[in-house]
Length: 203
Ligand SMILES: [Fe+2]
Ligand SMILES: [Fe+2]
Image 1 (tube, rainbow, N blue to C red):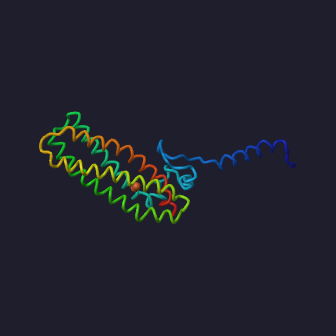
Image 2: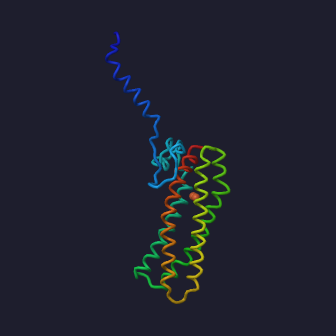
Image 3: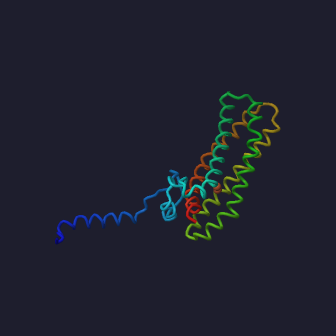
């Protein structure tokens, strides 16, 4: 019943090789232009995005993810209304009627969301994981830029509320804000989820 060392050797090497591979990061941020560094992704490695909605974690992660889904949906509807007007599918009155109140609600909700994150959640998460401080600082700087875009959106909306007669240049300025906001928001929300959702799930 002796063990043949020459038969065991290849298997041992292969075990060693797989052990070495397992120390390399196997997870990457989901956004193609993510600003997240690989050494901030140790929690995402433990809980990849395909497990966020599993029954073990959804009760802790879904409220945050649903808020983000709602934000993305509101931004997408504003983009659609703006594009439909610029393509001629909506007239000026319909465009104004549909977009004015939606923008006011959206701006208010997103400002509130950023405030809760900046003053409540992010400091709490950094105290739990100080090694993620630089990552959360990126997200806080994103909020400053997003808040400026929201303020610009609201001031364009205020102009729109007063514009009884058609002002295509104003609609173009609003569309430019929405395009910039959509791209940046997508990057921000995705990076934020990669950092935050595993914290929520694993705490
Ligand atoms: Fe955020
Ligand atoms: Fe958020």
